[in-house]
Structures are given as structure tokens and as C-alpha cells.
Image 1 (tube, helix red, strand yellow):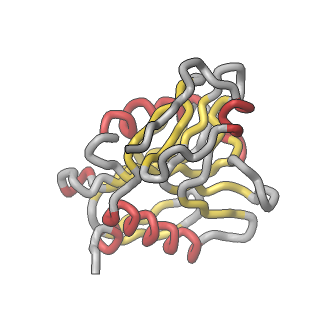
Image 2: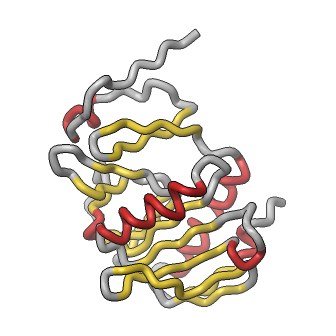
Length: 188
């Protein structure tokens, strides 16, 4: 049996960077200096991330990067928040960048898992909104048809829904593209 040791105190960015991957089956995030653990995504979740990453990379203009599973620095203050969204679209960041600054982020995408519904729809949405990230998409394969894909854009400091559904959706942010939600959620 493996013993998992997580810090018994609030951690700084330096502490976070010094942590070892204590359980490769878990995903770690840092919220207000507290280490949060959740199970790594299952294969269907990973398939959606891969398909979406492919679509975004096909449409991205020069000067944009599409990064699945990248660390996103929401707040690097004394008690930092570092999230790991399913997909991040950002401007050009230097090669080898450890985490993407929220200020350089154009889009964050979360694919909802059974245990992440409230976190993705409420907590992370609020954090990304407060950090000023211009676009936030939620993909929920288990939701009703019209809620499987929800795109929001930052308007006046708050997210406003700009698209939703399960068919073909056209969007302008982070760059113009059309997404076939049904194709993203089909596993062949």
C-alpha cells in the first residue's frame, strides 16, 4: 500500500514547485494555498480533450498556443491558486514555461466529470471570471442536449453565455471557428 503525503499546511508557489508527483493516478491543483486532489480523467474525458485540442489547433491563428492539461496561474500571491484546466488557449508564451499566466490566457475549457460538476460550473467559472480570462467553455457529456456545450465570454467583468447546444456551433473567441459538439462526444 502506498502512503500519500500531502502538506499539512498552506503552501506557497515555491512549496508547490517542490512537491513530487506523489500519486500519478491523481490530478493536483492548488487553491488558496491548499492542495486539492481529484482522480485523473477517464478515457472518454481524455478523448474529448484530444478531439477538442485537435480542432482548436487546426483553427488557431499565428501567435496562439493550445495546451491540454497546462497549469494556469490564477493568483501567485502568498496563498496561490493554480488550476489545471482540460484545455488552455493562450498567446505565445516562451518555450518551457511552467505555468500559463491568467493574463496571457484567451480561453479555458473544462470537461465535466461526475465529481467536478459544481466545481466547473460555479467555482472555476468564478475564478476564471475574476482573473479576467476572456472566454470559458464547459463541455458536459452527461448533460441534457442543450447543455452539453456552453460557451461564455467576459463582458463588463462577468461571463455572458454566447452559445450552447449539442450540434454545430460557431464562435468568435478565442478566434473564429466552428465546432461540431456531437463529433467531439462521439467515441469511435
